Amino acid sequence: MTNEKALKALRQIKTYCAATQLEELDYAIEVLEKLEKDGIKEPLATDFKSLSK
Image (cartoon, rainbow, N blue to C red):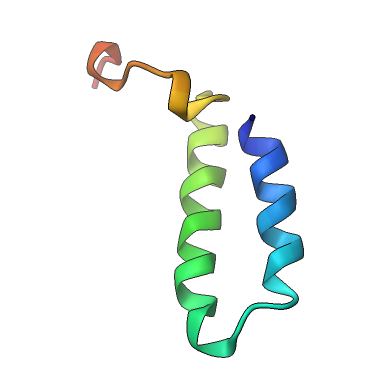
């Protein structure tokens, strides 16, 4: 699974999400967008300890 696929699914889910959960869903989308922007395409397969700061 890549960020791109997950983001697409989350955006579709957002349409049906309860209003009380929109903030949390938006946060998850923002996190994945930042990872994608920073070049981390597959966060679950990434060793974050080895990434330089």
